[in-house]
Image (cartoon, rainbow, N blue to C red):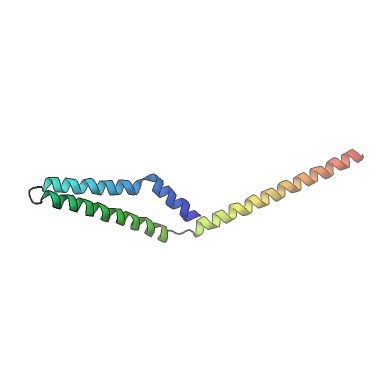
Length: 109
């Protein structure tokens, strides 16, 4: 669940798409500046291949980030929050029961 949330946030931030777009435009600029050395078909094929390669590299970076991130602290935090919520609900139930007992005592007197 934590990994899914993290990866969804990364994908929603569009940082990987920005990375791929930057590599695409850098490749195009490279070929425009060196246009006398390459034919148009070489340029098109190279831009496509480089863009696909950088998209793959971006996905590898995302998967390595997810694989190498330490989730122990986050998992402990989630478990602590669940336990705190459960304890809070038990304390609230106890307060309700005490109030019911007090009202019963007051009505008998």
